[in-house]
Length: 126
Image (cartoon, rainbow, N blue to C red; front, top):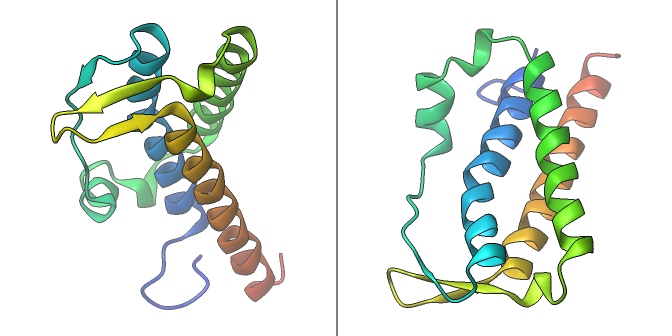
């Protein structure tokens, strides 16, 4: 069930949110544990992952649990470590990225997709 033709279903949106957080986890952890380290991350294409990981047909129960666990884990580290949000990694391109610069977009990303989920439910009267 999607909100419009060509849009992702609620299931696909949820799995995408989880993968977005999961793929960001390593960079955040490196910045927290080893500030200033060079981080070699790979960008990913969400549509390729949606197809390759079969977002359309997978259960979301474990995915939601993982999303909550990642958020809880990172939240705990941010509360515990002094200056956590200002710790950084250097990307292989030479660009410096702080934990704040990675966490804040993730928050907005989740809120954006929650809005899409609510819109989809509204379209379908759920």
